[in-house]
Image (cartoon, rainbow, N blue to C red; front, side, top):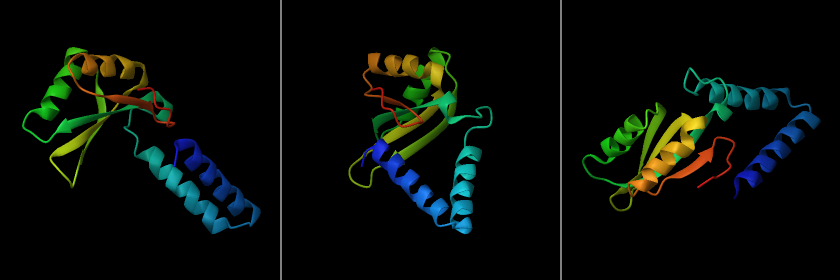
Amino acid sequence: MTELDRLLSTLTTVRRIVEEGDRDGLVAVLERARNARLALPARFARAEDLAELRIPVADQKGALAGITMIATELDISIADIEIAHSVEGDEGVVILLVEAANGTILRDGLTERGYKAVLRSLDGAEER
């Protein structure tokens, strides 16, 4: 399912909730949206201020340090970081949130050093 398909599905669900007058359902949807906004790093009030980079890495010592050192060299602050480990094999994905204005700079810096980073805005548009 593409990001657009997920968005359309969610909007259809919200429309149905509103049409049916399901107050509890609408409150639940709005609370999930509020929780998602609150989960954003504190200095960023809007999701569009951030970009996400996904970087596949081998599960080995220093993998994370190599990525964060590149960000440091480029003077880019990492707003949030997550490591998604694969249950199969010994690879994972480092997921970084950075200021949207710096996303392309960091992606290019990682690519120059052999990483295969994928950049996307938090609205789901993949930039590669």
